[in-house]
Image (cartoon, rainbow, N blue to C red; front, side, top):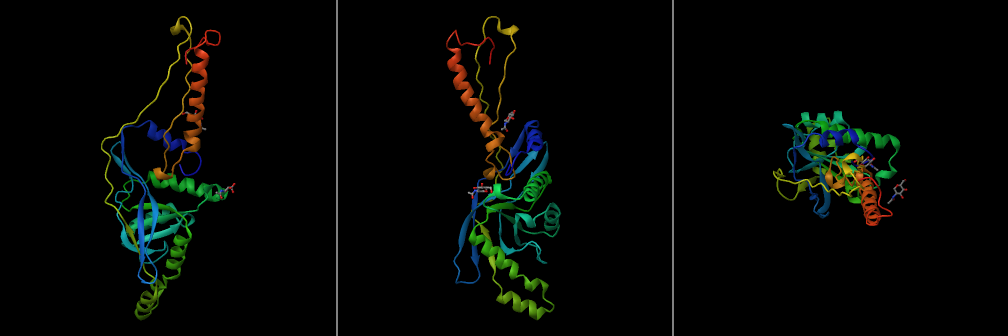
Length: 269
Ligand SMILES: *[C@@H]1O[C@H](CO)[C@@H](O)[C@H](O)[C@H]1NC(C)=O
Ligand SMILES: *[C@@H]1O[C@H](CO)[C@@H](O)[C@H](O)[C@H]1NC(C)=O
């Protein structure tokens, strides 16, 4: 989860294995402006994950982009890579992009998610959930942190879409010739499904005193996986990294106490 808890969806995944994930490590996009004065720029991006859940496919299917950058409200979206800020994107806009055959979507995330307003946090949470629950998206969706270079590109393409709104063909031609074109290119190959992967569970046990079967067992659990729209961005600090840290410390302390008969508790852990 990029922001806060995501219990409902996490539970859904927890309870419905097996599922298969697609390859999702960050890759780079190179922007090569048509203007030869500006150099190409590379930056890390995070792919929206794809997974199969009980036969249905979720997330974005393809991963390759080699197309011109456009703002989300441009008139011509077909085979274009849409570059949008988080607040520009809504689930209905996303469906719009799909229906107009947009080639890809790059969502720019503010550098400091903790500083988002309450309203924007909620927007991010519901967008994340809605995008993940959309079935069969074919358009590649990526996330990147807002950097001065990306903001400059965003501003440029937003001011350069006049061609789309031009009243006459000549005007449109003139605008497109004078406008900055940005080509978005993904390095690397098409994402591949992970056919075999292992999920490891770690368990520890401390024996109780006396007749163990008659004593209640105390179970302390935490989970060390996190779930989110882009796994590379889902740190899971509070779901459940902090729980794992507490559990490991508890195991360390209890195993010490259990080695001494005076401090050994009655119950099995
Ligand atoms: C991010 O925002 C939070 C809340 O406004 C602030 O406490 C924190 O220092 C910021 N972090 C950075 C790295 O700017
Ligand atoms: C961590 O996960 C456990 C269950 O797996 C839950 O009881 C606990 O509240 C979680 N803690 C945090 C901080 O999310």
